[in-house]
Length: 72
Image (cartoon, rainbow, N blue to C red; front, side, top):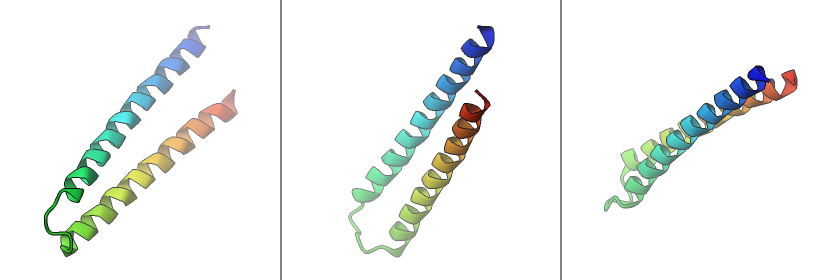
């Protein structure tokens, strides 16, 4: 019983961390959208970097959650 509660607490903490990361990335992307210089090269590069970071973080979390689900 205790083990299940600990696992649930860990998953909840991981979800909260993920939500925080996603909100931060969305905020960064929204700031880029408001940029007046739409053709700026650094803007395009930064958007790619943010999207790549978000994708890698999501993949890492999916692997962690997937490996925990297999253990059940």
